[in-house]
Image (cartoon, rainbow, N blue to C red; front, side):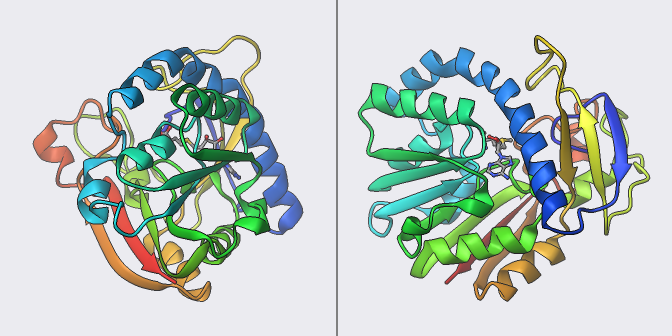
Length: 279
Ligand SMILES: C[S@@+](CC[C@H](N)C(=O)[O-])C[C@H]1O[C@@H](n2cnc3c(N)ncnc32)[C@H](O)[C@@H]1O
């Protein structure tokens, strides 16, 4: 069960070793460079939304973070895509924002949106694992966005980056898909076990769901996704030296993950989780 419900899924072993992690991340970069075209088409509308003061930060995140203005001089958004969520953190009160994404096409979109708005923002094209060292210790908030962790194949490496970016006392906010959602097939009206190994699921897949990216010109890239359990996420952050201050498992969805399930059934399943940790 992935965010993008692609057509062609192969179960694979979790990545062992740095070269395989890097190979999978590089493949994902190619896939996201292709997918960014959908975000490019949306840019004028995104600029208008942001200019009008609309924030795409999810209500669950907003309720947990509160007004950023009193405490967040700088927010760093890891896996920022085309930057609408990143720039929304300014609407939420951040003084300045920094976005990091592996896709050059997404970062080009983010930079053009920020320039159109004259926003105090900078963006870096790199693997999250290579987030520039000059940002270390500068973030009051590290924000990871929705649909982020499943693209990463080195969770300890990710946690170490989040920890080094934070200033002492700074806050990491993760709001992402709940790993248990992968246990259920997408299409049925009632929950049906997908057959995956909850504790060690990785997959390669091809194509994007019609309600997210849809069909793209050219040969679609293979991409690689990974289920990280709540326990693995929490332990990685503890090992990176962070203190978990909040953890909630929630029925609130941020995309139509079970489009045919009656709402009263769907809301009995965990869809997302919210985690806060402090350095
Ligand atoms: C689902 S999108 C995030 C969407 C975003 N929350 C939004 O609503 O627009 C996942 C993002 O992660 C980025 N990404 C995937 N692997 C990455 C990596 N290893 N390092 C940095 N960014 C990565 C992709 O390029 C993509 O922009």
